[in-house]
Image 1 (tube, rainbow, N blue to C red):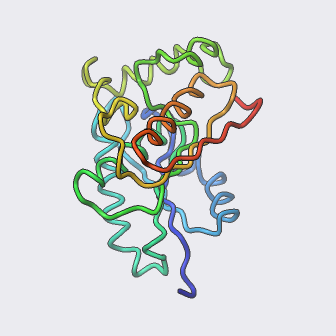
Image 2 (cartoon, rainbow, N blue to C red):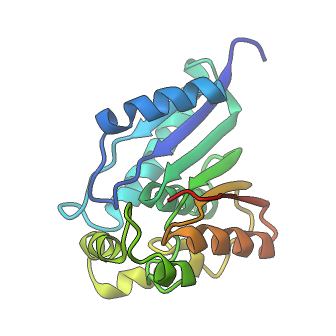
Length: 210
């Protein structure tokens, strides 16, 4: 196909509580340039006003809308990806699961940047880097509590995708984690779980990054 480009549907980070289009505009403009793709940023509704699973359903609906409209936007409909960073990586992973379960459009891949995948906050990196200068244990606990309607929500695969009993038949995943980050193991463990379920995954660790 000529004159068409891939589409990356991006779920922003911010602990499900913060983040907006203005904050992400410079980063996503650069990402669009280096990847030679169009990027659609989802302005999903934020917690605590809108609690779980509002953000997930917003992202799911946005993908359906984009997949339908892509044929009018000079987008290669066979190269639609979902992506996100931190809590946005969580939303991207869960949206990919919902698309599979609800028989939605098939994505070409998922790109998860330092995603949070286990909201119980019990991993080794969570303990080791709980006082990280960029993101610490108290901040993560605050985000999780504000997003959840009730404590048991945390155990839902739609909240903690690592806890899903079925990670098969998902789009290939590129997972990029920062080495000195409480969420480092969330990405590593999710990539391993995907691979064990026969879903292609590639995990990259940014050494020295936090």
